[in-house]
Length: 65
Image (cartoon, rainbow, N blue to C red; front, side):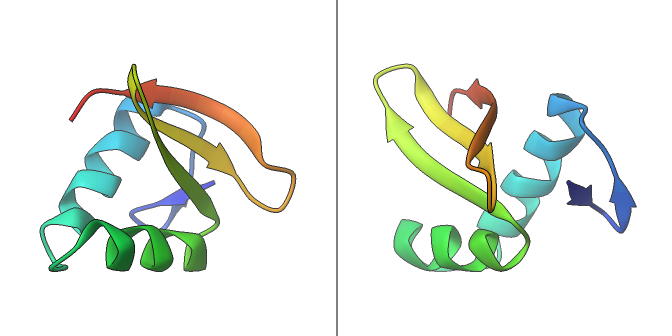
């Protein structure tokens, strides 16, 4: 998916993008909504934040927050 205007599958780049965008919003709900606009579905799990690509909902990875 796209992170910082480039197509990437690199989870480190995606995580950096997601965290940078998280700093711009006030709540987790707003952040998840905003990321859906970029084509990412975020879900909290016991292991951290699970990141999936939309519309297939293919899991790209998980990171701790």
